[in-house]
Image (cartoon, rainbow, N blue to C red):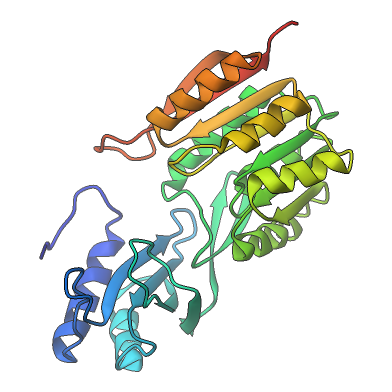
Length: 300
């Protein structure tokens, strides 16, 4: 749909969309057609540091080459204030997954920087990071409150992305173990720990269930578990391992009330009771909401 303005996204996106429209029209770049599976440009993703002003523009194409990429960079640099990175990603598969495997920086740096509270984060193109960083600070402070750490706890942060929640928790915990399946995000998480001079956080690449199982077999257990899964929620295998590990508290961060309800019902059967709920509106003017649940182990 050819829109000139969107009231619920960051205003910088208007300059980005306008610039890419200019590029598409000037250089006859075909838009990918979901029906015919033909065309070049599939998706545009933007990353904006609310607190730093850094801007990243990511273009996903079906083709290996991005036509006239130097001209595109010229147009974006002319029109987009704070442009720090332009990235080209190739996705030639028939799928609704946004990113393909091949990513190349065509202008600027590989990452942009954002700051939440007094922590700094370097974020690359395919690393998950909450888009509304103003409300993300509210979210993370609530996670910290629900975790109620005393400095003696081992914490597992599952689906940890670039380690943002992990690093918030690490300053109050004995040790934090972050697990994330996206290798690039784990690389960012380790870099962010170094950037913020946090030495008591370790990060592992892998599927959450298998990785936690391996840690558990090595004798590494958690007093508090944080889960922040994608919309599909947690796998039952992971929930089983968490229950067997028997942490005192679980903090569940959810972007999908349906899978949250499913997982809470299962955890309730397995001796964990939800004792506090806090929604956080990360997506104003939409039907979506982030929800935090604090669960405590029932007395047996």
